[in-house]
Structure formats: C-alpha cells, structure tokens
Length: 202
Image (cartoon, rainbow, N blue to C red):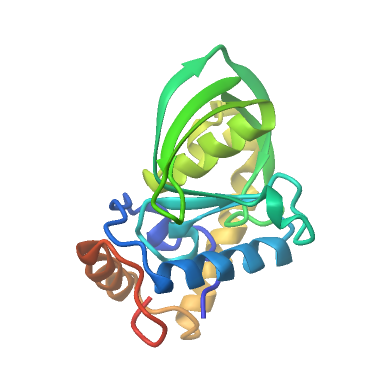
C-alpha cells in the first residue's frame, strides 16, 4: 500500500527515471495516488512522494474526487516553454502544514504522455502552471523549499526541522526502513523503469 512520504525521506531527493512501461500496475498505482491525494486534500502528487522513483505525476486542481473528469496524469513530462513569472503561495503534501511564497513561471507549455500512451501537449496558466512546475520539480529531486528566498527559508526553518524530526522518529520506531535500505529499493525500481506489481517492493 502506498503512502505519502514526508521530508526528508530519500525518495524526495531521488532524481526520477523515465517510465518505460505502461501497464496495469501503473494504472493501479495512479488510482491509489489519486485516492491518497484526495484524502490529504491536495491538488497534485508526484510519484516519488509515494516512494516511486519514476517520472510521472497526477493533478486535479479541484481536489474533488467527485470530479474525475478533471484528473490529469503526466507520464515522462517535460516543460518546453516558460513565460513571465509570478509569486504565489505553495504548500506540499510532504511538508504538512507548511506554506510559503514561491516564484514560478506564470505560463508553461508541457509535453508528456497519458495513461493510454498518447502524447499530450498543454499550455498551462496560473495555478495549473504552478502545480505542474511544483510536481515536475519533485521528479528532479527538487523541493519547493529550495526555491525560497533566504528570508523566507529562515521563517519556515523551525517547521521544516519539526517535520524532519517526525520522520526520523518514525524511522527509529521501524515505520520506515533506514535511508540506505530505501535507496536500495529506489535503485531497484528505477532500474526497471516500471511500477512494481502489487506485492513487490515499493
């Protein structure tokens, strides 16, 4: 079963590998990710936030499970154009309760594939653009706190340390493997370019 991992779980700094296979395991994990995202009241979730070091993320800007028509899946996404810039508030499901202002491009053009393997080409504005950039950063092992100005980073540092301490305590209690074990698991998944089937390591 998947779960959203908190900072500083090693998957959050792991540069994801391209998806090589679209199969039932991937579709099942995508569905599970949407369920997790809705339960956490989020609008987006990247694969490495659930311990999968693969290049895909999901969005539903409504955050409403009753609006499945607004669900979008991006496999192997790439931003090919950025326009202008704007500052806006961001949060992250791997940093519960932490929000800050982040500078992003106002508009982006992103190319990717959907779950049917069909190419998609989207021009996104405002919140849609911000969400795409936030999730794509995740796939590169970058976090929104990395984009904060020094002053803003100082303001959230206590909260960041609290989240980190919570993860380390959970790890010490056996809720998570050691960092070394997690990195081995991530490497094994990344090498296949495919989501493990249910029952396999994740």
